Length: 131
Image (tube, rainbow, N blue to C red):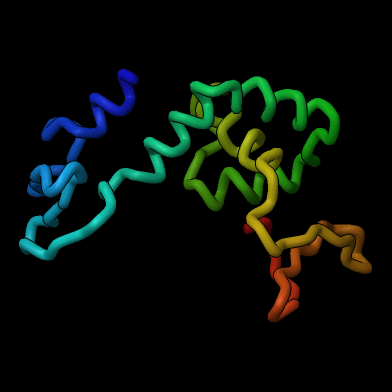
């Protein structure tokens, strides 16, 4: 419940954003005044709830079952902008992201080079790196 309470505070918003209660829900406005239905940091709060509900332990279990290779870790860290010199706990974010379940409709295959190849149906267009 602490996350839900934090989500509703003005302090949880980026600079210049505002919120107001509207019929039991919240409405948000960016610095230009444009209205938004979702909190601008919703992804962060979704991730925090996932972790609070045992997601961190599940990701660690998945990473241990299929440890990502060095190149996968490097590519994901680069995608997130995580430098090799950063704290190990920050670098772990990239490794755990590789253990997350794929989004609905995505499948992992192996390219002829041996690298993971991700496809999405219905378009089925091959895509690298991991979504």
